[in-house]
Length: 359
Ligand SMILES: *Cc1c(COP(=O)(O)O)cnc(C)c1O
Image (cartoon, rainbow, N blue to C red; front, side):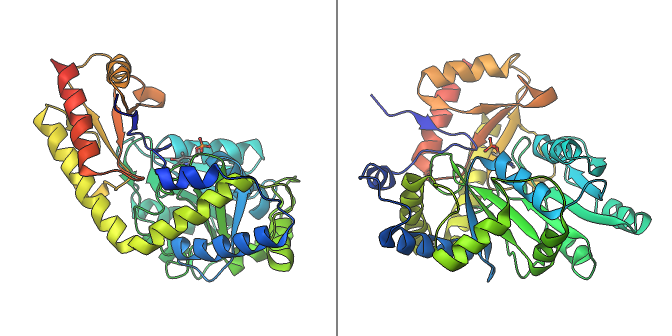
């Protein structure tokens, strides 16, 4: 029997050598061997963010680190703008509203990217704006939002640019320092070849200053403690997911050895191939503007399939897991992940199963 193939935009299949590494005995997180391991992965992570700043590792899923960004950088009633292009933009709106920030919700139709003129207008109309939140790869739609252009707008201002690259990082380019980003968050179960459970965050000097002023409540996610522990002890303040950090070292070695440029070029090719094969079966791209599509996933509709969720359940029984639509698009979309360790053969198997169930 073929093993189950995860073609979802997170979690992804974990390569055998990483799983084997994680099956080894647990080490202790206050000892020298852990400190060495944690210093090494913390250095490696800088290569993914493309930054000289430290990258902090938290034990939580992506939503946890999004919340950490909000509670560490802002204060009650501060005005922030969310570039809301889908379900994950909406999540920032909800987290910020939960902490009583004054949220401008700049909503776009699902499947579209943002319009830069709207951001310029919002900045000039709101001189008291403290932050902009945006999603790099909008996993609910397949849109890849250009974050560099927004970085150019915020770089010489006091506005903090906070980016959710949970599903964007690794398979799509991102330059933390060069694009003047202030806070970027990522997660283990998307591009990093790992199971869920770890999240990563980097902060600019501007963001670190804002952290000193922030008055929102926080304890577990107080990032000052994570910075202090990393710098002074090469450790985490609380017991980390040690096993996943062991896996992370193995994943970083594999990914960095292959090289991010090579990986990104490979995923562009695979994602385009997947799209072309789906079109042959009568599917249509949900993101109509080709330039707005990213490498993380391919989202498609099909006039002949009434209930996409039922359809993907059948494909799942045949051994290939694919994701469906979220929010108002539940049952109307297929979202096929193109990240993690996937190959052309995996795509061919996925297409084969979809084709079989179409008839
Ligand atoms: C997966 C994902 C998250 C985090 O979701 P969790 O279920 O909390 O891991 C956040 N943002 C984006 C864009 C994602 O794809």
